[in-house]
Length: 76
Image 1 (tube, rainbow, N blue to C red):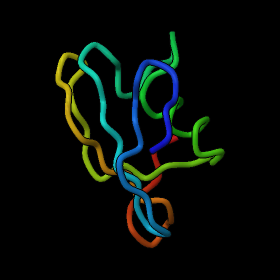
Image 2: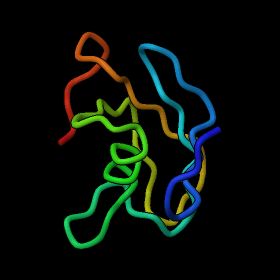
Image 3: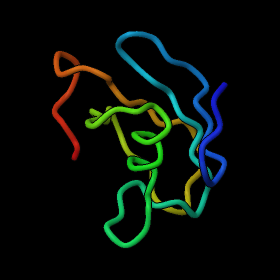
């Protein structure tokens, strides 16, 4: 498993998807401070992620991102 800032942990990854454990209190996407999307992109070294779903800021849990365009529309 790979650790990035704010304790977001990659719990699964293959060629198509990555599953990340999101802690409560972390924004999914934020322009003001690095949110989950930015942290995962930095940890994986990718420029674009394709979210399968989202979680509210105060909700912890697993978040699934597709890693290629065939699977989902982009979230930049």
